Image 1 (spheres, helix red, strand yellow):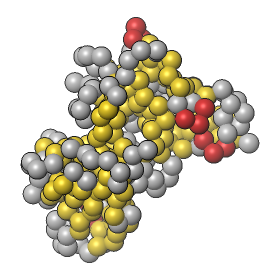
Image 2 (spheres, one colour):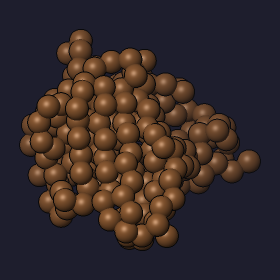
Image 3 (cartoon, helix red, strand yellow):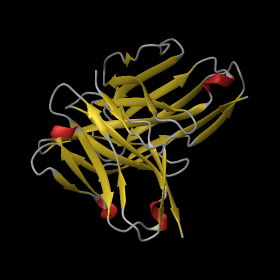
Amino acid sequence: AQSVTQPDIHITVSEGASLELRCNYSYGATPYLFWYVQSPGQGLQLLLKYFSGDTLVQGIKGFEAEFKRSQSSFNLRKPSVHWSDAAEYFCAVGSGYSTLTFGKGTMLLVSP
Amino acid sequence: GAVVSQHPSWVICKSGTSVKIECRSLDFQATTMFWYRQFPKQSLMLMATSNEGSKATYEQGVEKDKFLINHASLTLSTLTVTSAHPEDSSFYICSAGSAGGGSYEQYFGPGTRLTVT
């Protein structure tokens, strides 16, 4: 069975500092990996996805993620965080037309 | 980009009544739609997978007679919560699957907040 672990429930980062959100997955085949962001009371917005090819994936809003098969990880990064990045971030794994399995999420707090 | 809408965005109903939530893919056809439930400060839990023209596939522990799903067209799926109770209060999110260019992703609706009093 596929699973996703986001070890950090919440993270606080100073505005302008770099950010890395961790995601580890368990999946039997080649995974499709996703990062979504959710603002309070809102749906999910896709930040980026990995299907194949270059393991460093660029997304929207200046985010990137790197797929490391040997570590079963797909960590999300941003070089300089803005106050508007404060939200909940979800990592998800799936394959083809199958369902997505989400991690429990990491709440990002941005301090001034 | 692909847009998915949900209606209503929030609803309050009395215990024992039924409420219907609509999920529409506005600019693409979705053969598969998904319904999720999200409790406060928790992740999304898949309730069911809905394929156009066929019966929905429910996840273990989800009562199919309580959460009725209909996927009558390639752009519309509905979730009806029957005989709602306060414990059904939650945030319900749908998504629509789209494939193309060798990739696949789900596009999420903005969610529906259900409060049962």
